[in-house]
Image (tube, rainbow, N blue to C red; front, side, top):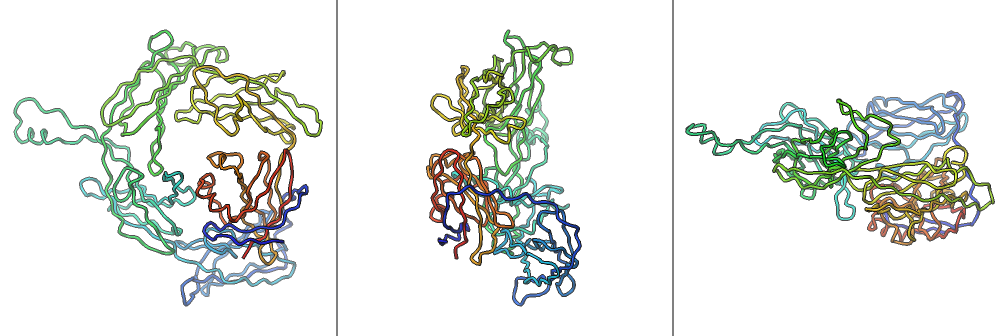
Length: 581
């Protein structure tokens, strides 16, 4: 078995020999026997600092794999714990306490999976001490523009990752706290890493007092001057900015405390956006839904999607500066006095309208006119490697989801002759998908969706001003598969992650079906299914960040630690991996 050393930067591990065999599918985990037995696990929880001290009242958890058998206990004054009367089996052990970092037994570092403990009947297993380290702390005070502390304000410390030059929130590393009566916050238990600290502003609009108003108030001669622009507190990032790219990144090492992060919520001018909607006949439209959606979302600000019923005209108030998409969806049915559609939706013509607008603190008006929605059509094809009979095409569902802001999705069911039509679509980049129901769903899988020489499973469908037809969606009963075992240097199961990604960099992009991962189970087995044929890299990782998986810069650094492996149509291979040292 060959080993390859890897870079520790991403925890990429190893590699071993490959044998072109049909991989065995690991058995399903079954509920275990009763949770009593004769085995025992004992150990202690200590501080990581030297000299190590016992951690009192730490919560120690023990879970038996494949069962609902989960137990907890509290460490005593000496930091010790005991789990008695345990049945034989595989166990995972962990410890945590208050603001200290959670740790799994056997983990190399924080945030990584640990190693399993295998018990036999009557065994007395003494675990090595688990060490707890204080988490990082960020603290400060949030004030308004007059320097007054803002109470009951949600403040977050969000892990940040840069993908394609854009900052994004690391969803697995978000910590929060609420300000007290003085506007003070304290967020603890943070993992080492980089963070953006930001506060979500309350939904409140106030009017700025202009110098002219102040002058008139002291000497009220003549008519009162016009009021100032309405302002709203904006979601603000430390050190006091509404621009995600201008936010200061706070880098924390283990246990570091930053308690000087004071900032002021920013006020931004808000506007009224009036949207007028007319129907096919040019008269004010009634019925349907009008949606206001941010075109580009700030990853550290809460900017919601606003919806309103269509009633000729609607005014969105308190709109903060930014780029927005306004979309109307409805149909040709008349409505009653309450605005409810009258008649059958199946026979109605689906209508839409869309416009983009930039809001910069001044009131604007947008005119939208409804038009008929578009459709796409094609046929379903089945290709069997085993000569199996084709399933019923009417069990196939096809869906088209618009990727651009504002939504606009549609779905339909194929006909018995294999043809399909999806109605109600809005122009824009869209993703097409298909599935089959019933028993056939365990055997038949989508392999391609071809249109104009392009596989729409790899590239978005550009719904344009005209209907798209002649799309061919192919199902197959033969799927590629990579499976095997992952072990450490001592030959023990290593429950880490296995990543598969294509050699062709063209597919290193968001949503690629050619990038897939799985985590080895407690027995060290892993399995990845259903990727297209071609050449791939395969490596193991101590941790997976799904927000980086499609970033070329990330995959570039994994490539030297990976092996290359090729797959034909429906080919299955076994690849056993061993962690290199």
